Length: 130
View (cartoon, rainbow, N blue to C red):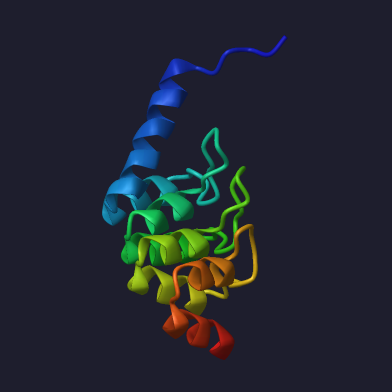
């Protein structure tokens, strides 16, 4: 039998995930700098970087990566932050992730596959350069 999570911990985690979604970089990194893992994931395997990337917050992505988050964390659906950024058309996030070593071939579908699906030849060229 597993113990139910502490409601206060769940509430705090929810707040931190919301900060990533909203791109509230200063507040988000304050929590990370105070000890919240930069690699924190939710119940679907979405990392803070995934949530910030998917919602177009390049500054939050860079700040999390600088604090130890991984650019290629794959969620429970096989997706990476880079593929999510390609899907959403978030160019600044794409560049931030690539600068941090994100692998365009990681995940299912990968960022490369996603760019092909949407006919984004410019991104395929960019991925080829990395």
